[in-house]
Length: 245
Image (cartoon, rainbow, N blue to C red; front, top):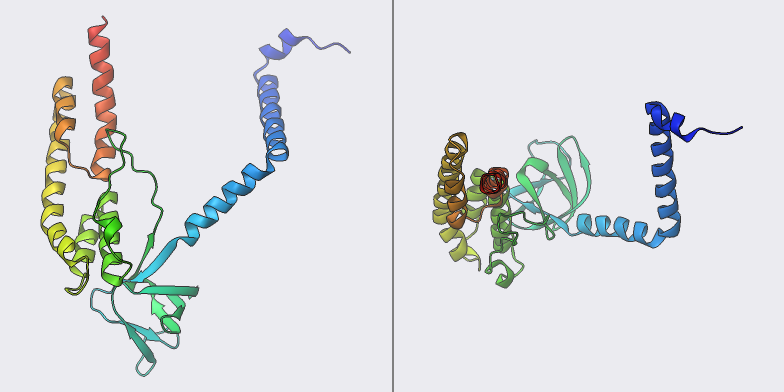
């Protein structure tokens, strides 16, 4: 029985079936011929998860460790300061079971998870936003709180970032940087927000060159840069079209 190729191509269902079969076959072949790549990706994902740490973040420290996942009188077995790393071995109804630094249960909402490997930072200039001070800080509670404050700030959580920075104790190596951050974070945030508003107005009025000028002095905050990026791309595209009419 002969197959008319033209007839097949005229049928959307047949074309879809052919494409599905081709993609499935290609995926199967890749998985078989590149098993190491698949394993490496799985191992990389596990590695990122393993690099995450859960730290104490209580608005009214210290954080109580209880012998059972319930808040009641007489079941407190230990107290932990902000920034201490918890070894989590289980969870139940909003509680975390820990083995270190003291065995027991803590309320999950009074902790924060921080990861050593953050997603790549997308900026308008395609460079990673970094704080040179972070690399020099020792691994101690205050430094971990400050690192998490910077992470929260970059992701768009100004309130959380300020709360974390305020939790850095005066005896921490990160205390001076945290105090500076308490002043500069709100200032940088307001500047970025105002410039973003100006960019929106310029977009509505087709003032593309003004949008491009905004990028030359835009604060290094990932959250606001990602919001501005689509407007900048549009401005570049529109200027190109105008120049090539």
